[in-house]
Image (cartoon, rainbow, N blue to C red; front, side, top):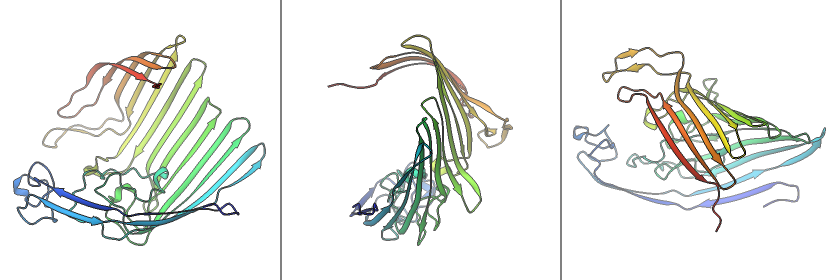
Amino acid sequence: MITTGGHRLHFFAEARGDVFFFQDLDEGTEICSNPNAGCAVDFPGLASGEETDTVGRFAPTVGAEWSYPVARDFAGGRLLLEPRVQLVASPTGRNDAAIVNEDSQSIEFDYAGLFDFNKATGYDAFEDGQRANIGIDASAKWDNGIELEASIGRQFRIQETDAFDFSSGLGEKSSDFVGSLNLRLGGRFGVENRFRFDADDSRFARIESLGYFRTGPISGNVTYIRLNEENVAANLVRREELTATARLRIARHWYAGGEWRLDLEPPPLRDNNGDLILPPPASRTIRQDFTIGYSDECSTFAVTYRRDQTRTTNLSPNEAFLLTFTLKSLVQ
């Protein structure tokens, strides 16, 4: 609904029911109630020695969203502002301990997903409780091709939820701040940034930056990422990486390029017993790619020589040749 004054109103509701059937919970590394049978940890949702279980839940959601986009011309450009407020209500206690969470462990919380009323990535977790998602978008575009975009937002909850690990920035009564800041200078240069800021610890929990350029036959980009999340169960660890990519057009359809990926915070190398073998270096090359390819309006074919420097106690560096073929579009 759009009012005569330009206010946008959106109402939504969802009636959802889930039924989970678990089998062979005492085998492999699944979470179950019998650690002596080879399970990872004790699972409180089952009686001792039980191997199967059936769990059901009813998880409805209702909500309303308001936004007010406004625009104004100024100094040879155009300014756009849009504040948004989303109110969502669901029953609490929808994440029973008997439900094994397999498909919703890794949550990437950013501004693009702030107004998803259920931020779980799969069906095992459900975002329950009463909450408000609040944010604002702003952009300025000038006639000379310069564009500037910014956004910031946050979630507020009446009660906490155990649908997410707190390292994701969600689940507590006040979430982390999420936002973006992008600058484009025509089609030749641009910088894009996404961030998540932990207000409780006064630090950035996640930073992703991309700078790209194109001039004549040369194009490339540089990507920087820093993750301060640490959640071993969801494969989230502290990481800082820098990746540089460049491409040179050597003919109308032919190009040569390369990629260099650098680990700026490599972990120390340990043996199977956890003993230190080598201390962490200041930085370490993760991967190098050298590519020659052909590209036209229909397809792309490339030959890549890759040096993968990934190293663990059971995996040594390796080299490989890759052949890739991509169809850009399919016409019926």
